[in-house]
Length: 259
Ligand SMILES: [Zn+2]
Picture (cartoon, rainbow, N blue to C red):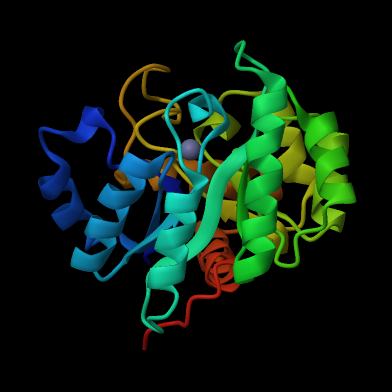
């Protein structure tokens, strides 16, 4: 069975040496993979890959840790304008965007970009991919006050398990990746969340699952470790986890299943 990796960053320099070899290998293990652009430069690269590989899709936006760099939401918006005229476009979401309080990126600027991207999501009726680290309360408040028509994914959800319910109630799917093999809180979140609201992701090149070293390079060939852990937590078969999470990924990204 094939996996759907809902979140990865193959444009990053960690893959400069063997990107193409990996993409060829993924043909045999994934049915879908979404590269997430984090700034304008990144957007151009992920767009190029998606046009070359049939299983690949992309999302573009300005990551909360990129807000201080030279950015242009107008240019990002222009890509949406141009791309979405094409009905076969593989641009399927907005983001990642959100709030990151782990480091010292200016909060007001992060909020400004977050709100602007919510507006874009509603303008183009696309799902939004949310990055939230140590910021779940504020992210929740913003999403509650600024409803996104097509909710999207709380990527790599790492907040309090109880809090995850609020995002699911708002219609968001939870992205589960490598951290589920390391942290009890994430395990608990998976335990209390319906499999119908979970998608899998690697966030490659970061956050590899156990048994790999915490700071080693991640890639989509490791999705089986995440699936195995989810199956164990929920007491269901790995096949069922793959089947459901793939179905959910197709649903949230509104990708028509290829026969
Ligand atoms: Zn990411």
